[in-house]
Structures are given as C-alpha cells and as structure tokens.
Image 1: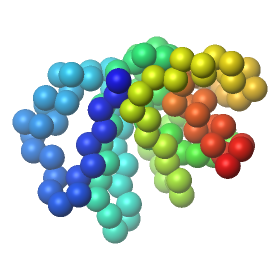
Image 2: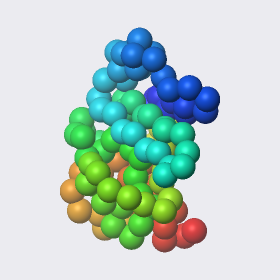
Image 3: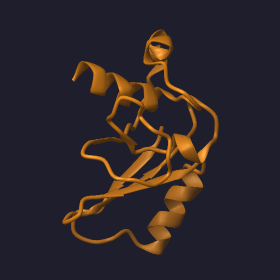
Length: 112
C-alpha cells in the first residue's frame, strides 16, 4: 500500500522522509493548500507501472491528467488497493498510464 504523510503541525524530518521512501520507493507526490499544510505521498506500484505520472495526488477532473505539476480544486490520495478497478478501466477512457487511483479520481469526477 501507499504511504501518505499529513503534516499537521510540523514538517516531516529528513529521516522520516527517507524511511518512507525506503518503504515505498515507486514514486512520490506532494500536495499543499495555499494556506495549509503539505501532504506527501509515497507510492507502491500495485496497479499500473512504475511511472512518475502515476504518483498521486490526482486532480479530480474529466481527464485526470498525468502531469507532474499543476493546480486543482480537488485532489485524491489513495492508500490501498482497488482490485476491481479493471471493471471500470474501459469506461474511464483515460490516455496514458493508468492505475487504480487514477481510475478512481476519474469516477469521482464523473459520478460525484
């Protein structure tokens, strides 16, 4: 499973980040609110290939873009495995690499 760190009151230390990377070394994503605390995600590639474009967070949008930078009103981090995601992969019609979390972000946009 992926590892998500929420920095409520203090930023994670260098040692904490290094430990997280050692446990989940298939990629990392960072999100932060303009006036809020950062969220750090360390990916373990259970669905989809090892690819920087598949590191969450994903924007909850129609195309659920795979850019590694940008802004979004809503984001999705996922800490788990969604084995049934293949049932929805064709309906998502996403271009580029696909993972369970990317499909989930698309479905959240589509279904609300």
